[in-house]
Image (cartoon, rainbow, N blue to C red; front, side, top):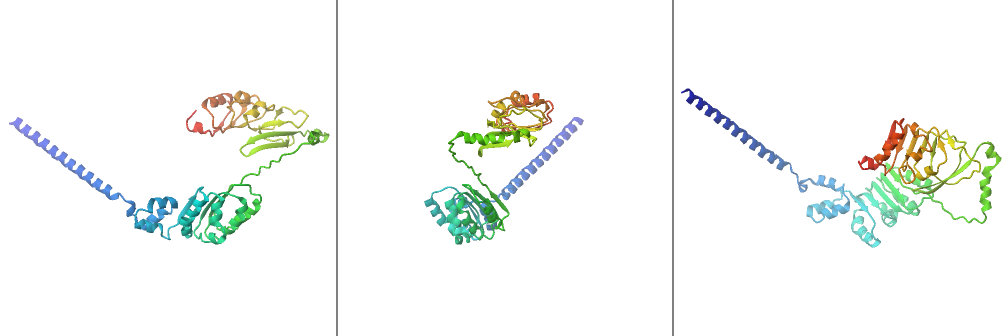
Length: 373
């Protein structure tokens, strides 16, 4: 009897456990169904958004993208595109005059009063839209204007038009040529009282004139003028250096001794104007810019007290770290700034071995930052 009672009790316990499991399964299924229902309810379709929200989205997009995406959908979106309350932006890249004139007539002219942002990439577009003044006066909502590849001779007339824009707050100008009268340009910008942001990219004037040398003695006499006793008595010697960079060719003519400079930049030399030999030891300089690898190879000076080194091309075909050690004591360097696109771990390891007193190492190499050697 006891065994029968025990078996009966066990069966009842198993039955209760099954009922509990079934209840849990039912709860889980119900929760899953409710979760799926909530997920379906949280999905919002674009066409279900309010007109006000859609107009706000439209103002973030370029007009061409808007027109291609929504003009052929339905009447509602066509009406929203034409809504006068919706501001639009135009970003115009290069196109032929014929295509631009057609684009201007079909798209820009009907929407002049709605344009909030305008990016123009050549002088023809800029003149067509902003001049004469009565054209520009229709841009009553224009806040941001970006003009590139514009010839400086048109700036005066364009700034007259810009003065009529009531809400212009951001202006970016990139002339295609050299602006001779920068002071006048700055005054014109300052007269735009509503501006909150302005950026101008001006090109440097590269004055290059071919000189006819009829007699070399004339130029020799000019050089000798700096080699008189007046300069020798004061230990003033002159030097000439040549450097090629992104802005063109530069020639530096300077007196070497009187400034007692703390910084020194190595450039490729083309001529030594002083006939008096200078001491190869320079003890006033504490910072050397050695970005010109070829200049390091040909340098005849030794910088005794350098503590800081700036370099970008040492690990090149011109020289290695041991070549640099010939012109300055690497072991006493405390700071090195390494700005190079071809830096690798091997060259850095060699540098660290040669600079035991280094406490600051600045690396701006994209290869190192990206984990490439």
